Length: 185
Image (cartoon, rainbow, N blue to C red; front, top):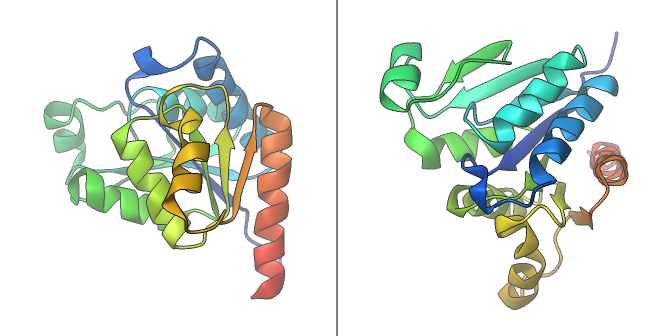
C-alpha cells in the first residue's frame, strides 16, 4: 500500500501589493515544486499568494485542495469574491476566515508562509501552537519578513520553523521536518 502524500499548505496574502516583486513568482515556484515532488497543495482558496501557488501546482500536474471560508460555491464567489481557478476540490467550511484558518492549518502536514498580512499571521500562530512543521519564505515581504522578530519577541522558543529565501531549500527542509515528525508517531 502506498503511503499518503504529504499535504503542504501555502499561506500568504490575498492582496499582494505589500509583497516583494519576487513573491508572486516564488509562490508559483513553490506550487510547482510541491507538485513535482508528488505532494498535495492545500490553500485557503483565495486570491493572491494562495492562488499563484495553486496555479503553479496545477501547471506542474499537481493536486490542489482549497478550504473556503464560505458556506457554498455561490457564497464563495458572490459574497466572498473568491476564485474557483486552479483547484481540484474546494471544501466550503462555512466558518468564515478564522474558522477556515484553523481547519486549513490542521489539514496540512506543514505550512509555508509567503508574504502575508493579519490572516497569514493567524495561520502561522495556529500552526506554531499546534507544533506543526513550518517554513517561512524570507524576502517575500509582509508578515513573512516580520516573523523572525515576532518569534523572538514571543519568548515561546523557535518552534518547528525553517526559514530560507530559497524555494527549493525551504521545501527540502520542511519535508525533512515532516519526515522527522512522522518517524516520532
